[in-house]
Length: 108
Length: 116
Image 1 (spheres, chains in turn brown, green):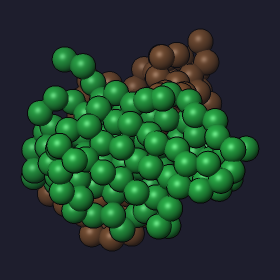
Image 2 (tube, each protein chain N blue to C red):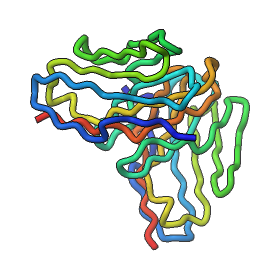
Image 3 (cartoon, one colour):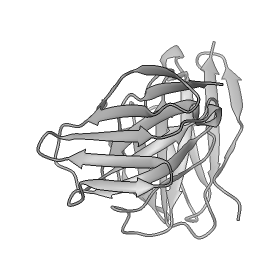
Image 4 (cartoon, helix red, strand yellow):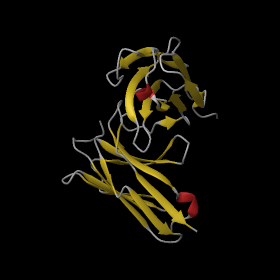
């Protein structure tokens, strides 16, 4: 069963706009990870945020974590057509539990 | 170096047949994971190995599913007497350390299994 829920389920934007995806989880975490999955491919790790961190940046990615609300958000700034993919949050150690994902479409 | 490699990329089988899916992790990676991903869903954990030891198989959906990693490198996921509900993408991932709590997992591109 999925621990997390992501919203929106699908998001369509124009190139250059920002994209924000949200993730909620149910149990306590040590860290939360975000992955990207292009159609027909495996998952690629994007960023990991620890439970004692509130915000983390990596290039055009910004992740926030609110452990009191058991939620996280992923912001992609200045989106590109190549950012079109599904994005998943995941938590856990040996056993990653994934959300259901947000399908992002960036239109050129 | 090479990433996680899975074969075959696509597998079509008739209901009731047995199938075997192979995963070659990144060389030297200690931990290996199998996930099942249904269409439009996130991956769901199946099982985990540390070297050749299967430390967690709690996600395997039935006793028709069996995984092994006899020499601590290549792993095989076997599904016996396949059912239509087994149709999914099977993903393999690996990490290079035992303490994986803060380690990203490196995924292969998966095997898409279709049961007719």
